[in-house]
Image (cartoon, rainbow, N blue to C red; front, side):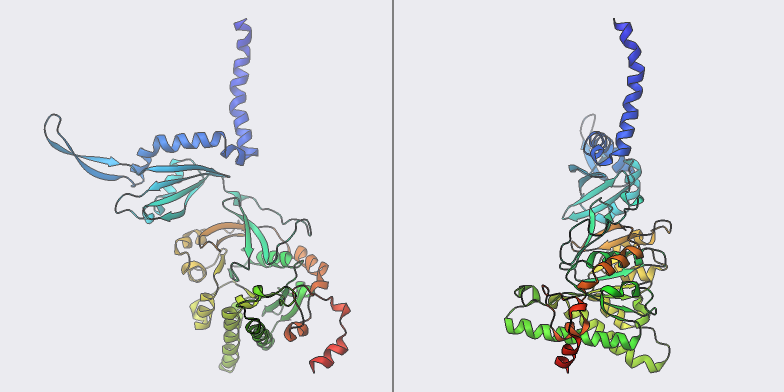
Length: 446
């Protein structure tokens, strides 16, 4: 009987590794919580002493031995590991710092740890007094491009927009209620325009007003004009638009002061003004000066944009500033504007100065990751959001045609600019443009 069964041993032995490889390929998430967790845990704990020594993380201590005579010997003590936990694409573990060590000692060893643990990457997720948390990823979820969901396939939450996928496998979401202003930097073909597409695509069905400043002649934002209350394409138009926004801010300040509240979100829904998202493309064009005759106009535009950023959050004005390059050579206005913007997205850039302007003040340890984004991976970016940590992410594939279709489909939600300035549009009172009595409106405005 036994010899007759032995014929099944070779096929079974071959089927086990093949099945494991198929499981790991087709469902890496479930693999990480099953056999992958066991294998990774054994590799990390069984090899940690050698790995720590090779990465320079062990601490040399002197120990006195009495056996056979008193003598001093050097002993390598490895850091203690604790809280080994699985993640969707790998695992995370905490390491206790030796006396005199800092998280920077582990940052210098991240590449060596990745090779030792046979994973794609290792990064420091967070740290605290005396410890660091290391996150290892077996595969990079950013290697694949995710297409944006069909229009109307998913519901929406007010002022929340899905941008793509983070390196942790979690959705990459912008929440303007948490982080009101965003700076998007990226070279040509890096994915910056895809982010603008995603914002228009995600905000179009929401009861919010969109306005745009596009000094590239309007070629970037004109496709979405159906959903925009106003689009400025020259510097004088930008100045006039920003002046109108300041008038809106002033009216909303008065409304909140009379109601005894600090921001519009504390107002009743019946009287709450509609949120406004301001899209600024190619911000450098607002600050570039062809001759000295433009100096005063540039200064006024810069001041108005800065004031909108400073005062906008409490009163429902949210700013998205995009450009290929931002540097201190554009003037102090750019640096002052950056200090008011806490949300950052940095795609592949052409120079280190732009990466520093985008990320250097909030996450200086992310600069190396931003400068290493390859040209063959458009949409990949380093982002800093609400939790103050930096992550790598990749934008969903949201094409211009998809954003244009969304703008046209929800064009009836576009509030007229005149009503926005006059304070006649509330969050729950969006009026289709075709239903407005323009003659009566003109008489009331005069």
